[in-house]
Each structure stands twice: as C-alpha cells, then as structure tokens.
Length: 557
Ligand code: NOJ
Image (cartoon, rainbow, N blue to C red):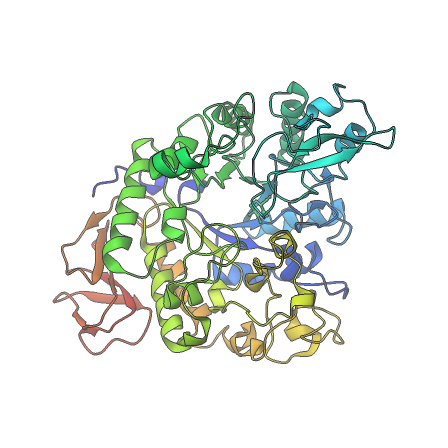
C-alpha cells in the first residue's frame, strides 16, 4: 500500500509523534498522600526523556470531585488540589519543553461534573431558565412525569436520565447523563457552551500546552427531538447506531476548535477519542479542517491474529490517508484491559470495562509478554503517530485481584456490581522492586501495596522500572531502543508503507530506507530474508529464523 504521506522534513510534529499517556493519579506521588500528582510527573521527566517519547498526554487534571477520576470536571480552568497548583502546571510545561517533550491535556466537552457552577445554577433555577438550557433538562413522561424522557441508556449502566428535586421540594425535571449520574451532558445547541470551551482552549493554549485529547469526541451532539433508540431497528440495520453518537453536527464543533489551534504558532494538536462505527466514519473526524488525529480503535480491539490484524491495519489506514491525516496507533489506554492479557487470552474490549471472554486463569504470562513485545514493535514500525500507555513500556499485566470493596470505577456501582470496570489497568506504577512507598510510586515510604489508592497485586514489583531500566533485553530497553531507531530512520513515523507478500501467519511490510518489519504469529518459524540486517527483535532470534510471537525490524539488502 502506498500511503502518500509527506516526508519528515515537510511535516508537522504531531503527524508521527510518539505520545506517552499518563494517568496522573497512578503515576507518581510527590507529596506522600498516596495519589499521583503534577510534581510527581515533574520528578519523572528524566525517565520519560530516557524512554524517548515526543509527547505526553495527561488524563484530566482539572478540578473535579473524582466521581469518574477527572472525567467529571467542576472547573476546567484550574487543576485539582490533589494534583497540585497552577504554578506546578506551569513549571511542568516549562521543564517538559526544555527537555523537548510536548504535553497535551485531556478535554472533556460532552459533560461536566454535577458540581460545575453551571450545573449547580441549573439545579437552583426554574425549568425553562437560561441556566437549565446549558444542559439537557426535560420533563418526564407519564402522568406525573415520573418516567424518563426517553429510553437512552448510560454507558456505565442504567438509564441515562436522573430526576431532580425542584425548589418546591417535589420531584421535577430530568437531566441527561450519558455516563455517570454525576456527569450531566452539556447542551451543545447552546452558544454559551461553545464559548465556554473556546475560553478553555485559549486558557491552556496560551500557557503553551500542545493540544488536547478530546474525550467522547463523537458525542456532544444529540439528534433533534431526542428520539427513543429503536433497538429492533438498530439490531437489524446498524447495531452501533444511537441518536447521540457520531451525529453529523458534531463535526461543526471540531471545525470551530481547529480554527483556534490553527491560530497558535506552536502548532497545537487535537486527538479524538471517537468510537465511530466504521473506519470511514472515524476518518471524518480528521478531515483537514477538523481534528489532527483520531485513535485507531479498530487496531486496539484487534485480536492477535495475522490475517485479520493485517486487514484492520490496511483498512483503517486507507481511510485516514484518504483525508490526508496520519494514522494513530494505540494498543492500550486507561479504559481497556492491558494488551499483555488481551493479546494472550483473546479478550476483546468494547470501550468500557472488561469484556470477559478468555479465562484469565489460562493466562500464559511468558507468551503474553512475547506477544506484547512483538505488538509494540509492530505499532512503532507503522506510519503515523503512536501512543504508549504508562506501564505498557514495562509490560504490565492487568490487575485482577482488587478486592470488591476497593473498586473505584463508577462502572462497578452503575452496572449493579456485575462489571468490575477499568481499575485493573489503572493501578499505581511500580517504580521499584522494593515495596516501600507502594513500589516507589509514593514518596511516603509507609504506603504499602494494599494502601495505594488502588491496591497493587502480588509480584507487582517484578516488572518495576528499576528491574528494567538499563537492563539489556528488558521490555523498557526494547521500547527505548525501538524509539531511538525510529527517530534515526528518516522514513519511519510518517512516510510510505508497502506490504510484503508473506504467509497467512505473518505480517510484513516495507518502509522507506529499505526498512522492513516482520511479525511472526506462529506456529512455524519464519526465515529472515537473505542478506537482511537485523536492527532489533522483540525476542531472541533462532539463527536466521524468526520464532513465533516475535517481531523483527530489518534493513533489507
Ligand atoms: C472516555 C474516557 O476515556 C473514560 O475514562 C471516561 O470514563 C469516559 N470517556 C467519560 O468521560
């Protein structure tokens, strides 16, 4: 496949940046309260620099009651006190930039927290008031309005409507929340909401932050009249269709934001979290006047299987390239089961919680790590941008033994305690093998593994940073070496890509500079092309052969 992507000298930084995702709560705790914070990130900048990424994406750090760990924002123009101060934020951006690392933040425009001043004002105002018009309030159905206005369901479980008590003390209108009850949806038909977000954009971009990851970028706009979901028709015609996802009008909002980023000299970028039903629809979010990148969720939800994965790569890449955008590869984030587990067990993940197929007890840790390593080399050899979620560079596993009374994800409660949610991939990072300070996560040595804000698993220290950094052959050192090679190769990142003919069990492609990537999914070994030089492999090669579950980067003769 010929991607026609521009070569490195002519392209903006974001087209092929490698971005490291930081779930701030779990990264590094500088003040010893057991919760990660901004100064913790500052203290780890040398580590991030050593890894060799171009950019950091920080999960929401704004003021928030933390009902959905920051995705419920009470004030978009201030940082959460648990995480630090605005001065800390300013120091972080300066220090990161001094090291040549960019930072993007995580903007949550579909909903706010119920503690946002606007929502509080809405609760204290009359139905029909301008305060209520910033959110989606409706009268209920039924004689006394005691049935929800429509049949929409919240992503985390249960109905998407909550009834409020009016000033007269009686149950009154309902408000829409597509996620948790504490996350009321904004009304994007209201001009004040548009202006609020323009102000937020400018507030952070003026401080030279390098852009935003846009949460639920396919949400925001709801179909006029808020019609019921016709589940029978949805099942028949398009099982992804909902009158609140991926509506045409949402693109107008992204166009508005692109105009803002275009007006900044430091070239900020926007990456969309858009769970659109097809690759073609996902690509619409990255048309030239919209967002810069969109996470490739077809890739993230793929199984470890050469034929289907190759098709997914090909198809998703074709669609974004058609609109001139770079592909954006991602295997892990804070919402999905770690890829170590997923690629071994065949777990699939549909964007919330754990989809439980594949028996976790059957996890083969050795094979899981082999696959995770190979998957990382595959990702970093593909054209475009790539994302690495904290701990992915260490080959962390999903944590499955968090006691039920310690689960924090709102999904646990809202699913009626049937879905354990996403905490298993959010456990604090092990920096040291020594368990003190919950394996070096906290400056407070008295924090033990079970006392971290989410408890760490038995053996969590085995994959700690200090057991891997500087240790030849470790997961960390493999990622670091791959990133070094990627930087040195003019044609890696953005640039042309052509498939190399191979068997059904192999993915092989060539990039500029005679660079090639081979991934062998097994079971048979695969011969390395004659005369090729090995640049890096995800596992030891068997002489001239690539073993199963192994990726290799080559320079072809
Ligand atoms: C997607 C985020 O990644 C997830 O963590 C969050 O719960 C929902 N959006 C709601 O904001």
